[in-house]
Length: 410
Image (cartoon, rainbow, N blue to C red; front, side, top):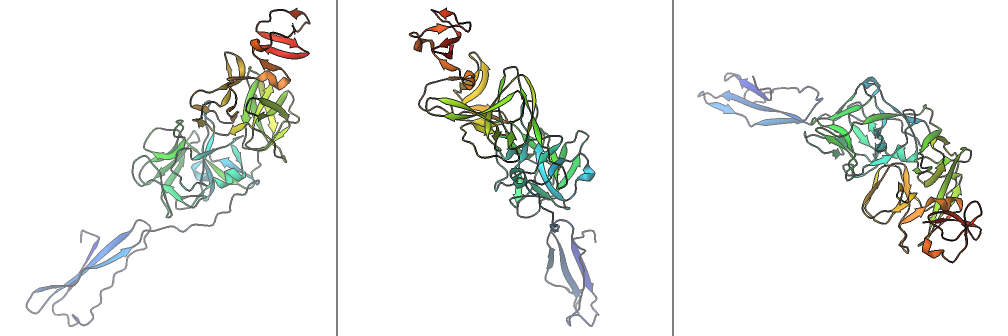
């Protein structure tokens, strides 16, 4: 028959077996696709040439679900995730789904540890060196496992895909199909059954991995390799401003980095103190001081916890709270300026919390070298000397010696 979903069986009216257990056998082929059904109906002619039908018989076969294969787990502290540059190298294993970033936006990995995967800010910041991402507790927890069937299973146990051709992301306990391809630029096209492609939206109110019909940023795949050599240092740039804030997903050791000094911060209601430090744990923000240039900072192999009020971020982070202090080079020079509206701090930077008991709007960085910031109206009864030791009766803006201490007059 033309319709393959129906099986028709004609029983001859003269067949003596009719009504006595006439058997019709039909076998469905092994299913390797979606759920399907076949329908049986047997009919015959009775002695008076009337057509007699059997009841409709339906046989349904469940959709094919490829069994998961056992994949060696990624291990924190062992190996690294290495960028996949060829479609042929996409095989079963553990992966990070990554947006590598650009001059404005930092690198982010899709966080497979989430229970709700389709959400704004569903990534973690990562460090990428020589096309590798180290296997840390955070990156290992964020992995997705690729199965031979093309399904991607998050570390939280959910498969991802998109069955409809519309923006979004489906997650399910059952496998969802994807196809994979690496283009000539090293970007990964992960295409769901509905036709949409997994990409990254870096808008400040989104910052999410999702399947999109068009637009958004291309992504890359990094595959776990237990034999890969982890990187052991990262490069940090200081501009001509002479200062920068930094926060790494790795613990850092500034002990022997010539020309670069790192500081943590201690904040009270009205005062901020900067404290020189040699080593900092992962995810700790620091203030860095050095001449313009790029510094190679080793990863710390062992580090103790530090007291630190810097708030470090490893990915672009929108702060809706006002009154925080961010490092800028503005009208009053390089320093921490209080925000008056929502502000997005960049990846791998740090900021200071609000000073609850102070109306202060600027924190000068001369404090890191023992120079105090003071307003001119508070120092009119002191004696001032310039840096050559000459007394100044009417100090204007600048650097002076007051009671044996350096003071900035604003």
